[in-house]
Image 1: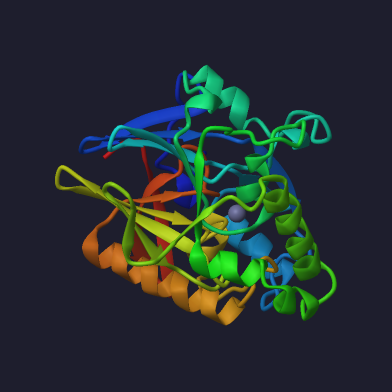
Image 2 (image 1 turned 90 degrees about the horizontal axis):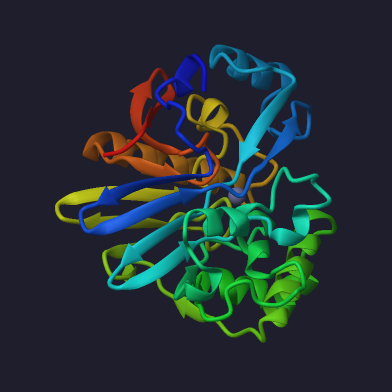
Length: 302
Ligand SMILES: [Zn+2]
């Protein structure tokens, strides 16, 4: 990134994998590619396209399009190889002309065999996090992995009554997509609870709003802690300085904004680094208070 609030990150030898340690836990940040998102009147529901362009300009970024990145992580903890979120899926590689759906090839390049992923932990049931559970042939992309899902999210999206009441468009499409993905896997998942360890050294914490069961993780080992936020804050240049802005992708926008401020106030107070899913690669950062919102300062390691 050049200039602006995202100035802390530097380029790497390869920008498809980045490794660091949290005590004894090894973290590998991988990219599933990106999507260019237009700056239009659909992206924010309580601010104008001019407001949005202004935030991007203030961050030194182009004001006509935004780059949305997708960054799953692999943790090695307790002798297990654990993938957190799966990206858009291999089936997106060809239609996007190679822009996204690149996770599996980047896992291989990083020396991580899809057949040797022991556990996949899903943060929430949006397509850019769950679609990669299936390979291009529609079969399990991680055939030997236990799939752990937030119990709140699982209950909501698999509830036929909730599906029957879903509004047309995005919500109905999400229900259909989640049924497609998890039915292909025979609905073989392990629901996990908030405020408990989901893996050794990894506590799942509820951060609802973006989706009803949206989950983040506190990863602690050897006296170090990193907060894996998932989608608490989407675009760093947009929602960190303007935490009250509502994105079209939030299921409960006021709750998403309240969660964002609660989590970011905590990260500032506790001086905890954050690992994000949609920040610029490698998406490890510290959060500072700035004006009415926050500033995201990129880091390359702890
Ligand atoms: Zn997402």
